[in-house]
Structure formats: structure tokens, C-alpha cells
Image: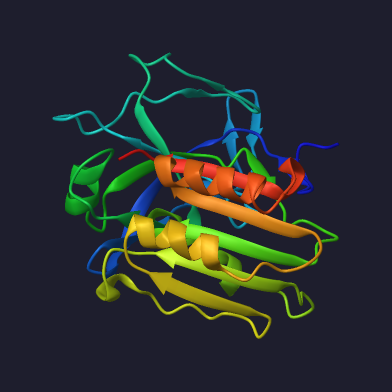
Length: 261
């Protein structure tokens, strides 16, 4: 059996220097940062041409490189035509993966949960239009699975960019029955999502409520694709439940711990 029914595409690793063009608070706990720059297109590097930015999957990720405290720039990898050499400029940078909320030929939107601690929290709070930002990736895209009967998507606030992008890009011809259960801290953190006619979005508050709602949700018949992303401990509990109690096979289960409490 294949590890996943999602078709996986691979892209070369490219370092891109971009500029912050907008900073918008979507909710009191979610900040959107828009990046722009010519490096989203293909550009010349020593030995060849770096490919243009490409992202085909709703849960793709880019690495955001953040300067060390007191520094203006992070130590950056050296770019070749099809690979990066990390650690060549004074060590490896601070880097973590984030999902593109939206992407075009000229702009890239990223969203960050404002929780006041953890990776890049100071940068997220202080970044302003005109600031330089460096990203790498995506280096792979996982597409929506074919030949499924239904889908259940389970996300906490850190996975909202993936859910929002999925719904914004939902094709009219896709009629898969889809239930989405999202955990956010308060009602003020709920965002406006445009669910398709074949889908519904359920909002809950609190990690235990999130897990409990998953355990109580009406389960569809047939092949059900389950996607889970959020706090690692809660994701582990949900993964075990859907595997043992709902019998979801490994090739239809995509569970990722985005962060640890």
C-alpha cells in the first residue's frame, strides 16, 4: 500500500529575498504578513536559473528565516541552480515552516498566530512594511487525494492558513462531502471562511473540546480522507482515535504536529 493517496510533486529549493508590503491583523490572535519581490519569479544565480515560486498544495510550507537577536540579517544558505548549501555563511539560520495563505506571481501571504512566545514572535510583532524577509520553499506539494468518498479536516488556529487556502481554491467540480472542525481560543478568533455547498465548518474553543468533537462527529461511509494539524499532543490523540476507532488507513490519514505546548 502506498504511504499516501495524495500525489506528491517536488520543487527545487530556492532562497528568496522578499519585502514586507502589508501587515494586517485578521483577528486579535492572527496576523497576516504580505511579501512581495522580484525573487518570486525565476532569477539568475551562479551556475544557472533559480525556478519561480510554485505552490500547488493547500498545506504546502515555506521556511521563514529570521535574524538572530540584534542582527539585521540571518545567516543565509548559498544558492545554486537546484540546491542550497546550508551553514556556508556563519551557521544555520533560525527557520520554521509556515503555510502560504495565498500566493500569486507578485505576492505571498503568510499568517502567524500571535501568542507572544516561541519562534519568530518578536519578529511577527515588530515587522513592518519595507522590512526584508527571506524564505525557502516550498520544496514539495501534496495534492488533494483522488477517489475518496468524504473528507474530515481537523485544525487548530495554527493550521487556519491551510484551511483558508483550501476553501478559497476549492474547485466547483469537487463535490466531496467535507467536514472541517477548527479549534480557536475565543469567538473573536473565528475567521470568515467560505465553505462549499458540500462542506461545513464547525468552530470549537479549547483543545479538549476539539478532541471531543472529533470523537462525536458523524462518520461518513466509504473511503474518508482525514487531515489533522495543530498542537502535537492533541494531534497524537486524534490520530490514535481515527486509526483505532474509525479504522482510517494510513494512506488516507495525514496528521502533523505543527507545534508543542
